[in-house]
Length: 371
Ligand SMILES: Nc1ncnc2c1ncn2[C@@H]1O[C@H](COP(=O)(O)OP(=O)(O)OP(=O)(O)O)[C@@H](O)[C@H]1O
Ligand SMILES: [Mg+2]
Image (cartoon, rainbow, N blue to C red; front, side, top):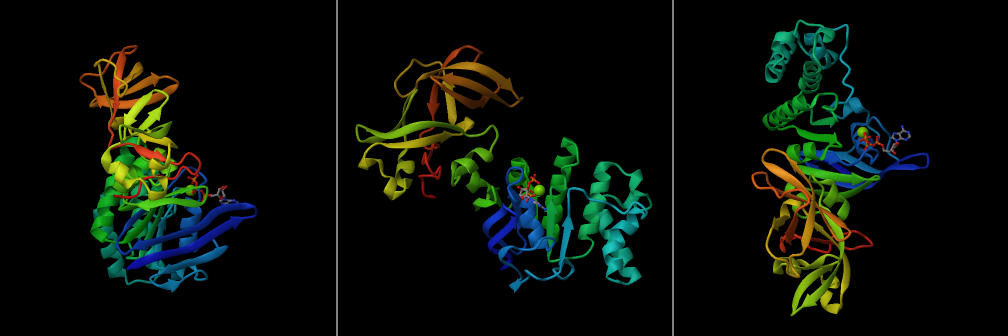
């Protein structure tokens, strides 16, 4: 069942269209991530779901009930925001207990719930401290505790980890995933960090300039991006992109680029959308390839494996990123770190024919149907 449904959701601030006809359904128990660059409308969408922002047009349903005009406190939602303010004049215990006291729960229940949540988050030894006596990570946990101390229908989290250092972020990210799996509470999580989105989300909604670009499981977004924006937003280093033309060599479809002709694998040819068939004549495309789908070797040059110059090798322990120039194009390849090429060396490049991505040069939409 869908817990949250947004239908043609629009938010305007004066002339700014912050959220532009968003349609999304979030399932019961799902961990949904909204991701996209700064200003794309993630927070505004979340705030409308939470009832903190009015809706310009469109509808929001929670558990089948239209909530456009329902006050936040009647939506049975708990929210955690980037600037998680704890009440400075309450001790940790009372901060976590606050939502239960507000609802006039019995004292015994409050004791029990606060202790359970504190154990879950590893802050039971801090219950008697003041917020100012906590580290950033501990404060973050207490804020989470305050959000989960009730059993709401839905959690809304807006960049809750952005104040933490890199290591603590990774740790808290895991804790939130565990917590959500254990509690099974439907969660919408906003971030601009694609790694966070990929590691946390059951599904991800990618937004750009108020519009939904694609909604899907992390592996679907990674392997089958709907457009060039999603292709280059998800994954690091970003997918390489360059101009090409679909042509035919001896009955086989190839992509002709300014630095060589590369075969397009049969599974991809089978997925070319019908109106895009290159048999109607050559067709301009934007070609994409992920860094790990380029291989390099010292073999002699052939038309299908042209040579590139190695500009830079960045070792990362297990892998190395290799920056290459070939003609006027710059590519990044990812290779195992044990035998990277040398800088300034010439290498032959191979593009995995089954891992190419093809996009329309005008609309930037994919030309490949889902398998
Ligand atoms: N109260 C407001 N008044 C006017 N414009 C606003 C208001 N809140 C947001 N906006 C505008 O709406 C757009 C979307 O903002 P929003 O905060 O939803 O972006 P975001 O995706 O959360 O970005 P970030 O990653 O930076 O938090 C932006 O162009 C922003 O400037
Ligand atoms: Mg935001």
